[in-house]
Image (cartoon, rainbow, N blue to C red; front, side):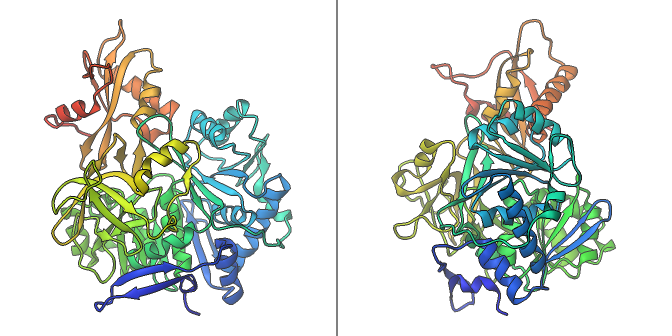
Length: 554
């Protein structure tokens, strides 16, 4: 059969065969679980959907028939415990295969899934439960997550049920056992395209993470992501290296890939080792691959010639700029050019080096035909070539485009602010050259991008201020060859404390205990005072300016 995405869009091409426009044409009740997964299961029940393996050598292959049945069972399990249309369920499942049918089961119910990383602590979990009114958490039994959930539950009465996969635990429902007993039949629940479907928490400039809401039409926004950027192969196998708790999983581990005919490869691991990833690509004959530039840096330092990577046809990257030396090293070893792309948790793919288009190393590419982008100054006036400004998104027509977020669950004022003047302000600074290629400069605000993670300075500062040695602090990012940016804490010490390496380690360990470990400051500088405005506000911009003259090592 033709790849199913063609049922939901109209494509237009230019004379060079490049995609010139794409129009989404779905009905008002589109639901990915029913209209894609179940439909493929009817037409091609034995088509492979998911190939999964873990670090212990266990393997599972799921067809669309499998996932259609399992997702109906999952919907019945969630319904048994009180979940219905609009209810919120958090999924902390790492890369366990249960994630895929649990997510689809929630889609079938019309519920809101909240994928979350396993790196969260009790504090992080409690904040999300309270902010989003989460009813159920389904989690991994690993990484001490059940203990964190139990602690969070003590202060969150709205959290009525906790479940684990991979075996039972006292106080938790055994999800796998419930699945075995669940009915395989499930009658369709009617959802509207603008009903909330996904909620991702993402770091902002101030305060705690924001809850980014996506609706039931959102998966169709990833047609371009998979078909024209990742260039997945009909009948092929796509591997994106991402934890299911991040929006990057929605980009590369389910929606666009299945819409465009490719199966998804999932490797369930704890720690990244380049040789293991290369072995997975070789063993399972992966045809397309996507990872942050940091991963490629490690891959090219491995002896690539030891592995048969001949199955790979396309490779992509996002999250930070790709260095030319890494690009060339990978191309020289494999013959493949890494194509960069750009987007946010709030969007789908907005900029990219798409297939059939001329590639520019280090550039985010050009606006995808589905989005209208520009670069403007502080007064929303377009700037000329090679002039720095903010990337903004201009909506097509009078309605919000498919793929764009529908709101911030906990901050409607912030949603109105980023959509001021009828324009979506991304907060990202860039310039475009004479040929229209966009080049990333930095965040307009103080959000730090490190190894693909977005880290809000206020989150880390709030935790640092809890340490008795910290009188005042400011968190910024400093450039890193490996990670894009490192989290740096500039600290004024409380009376009675002496600066030194042991105190740095103690403060770092404290942050690791209180927050997800990727947030801890890898660089700490002790100072006598922090630069401030006349109103007493800390000037992070001045700290960044002073740091440009210093050398920091990871």
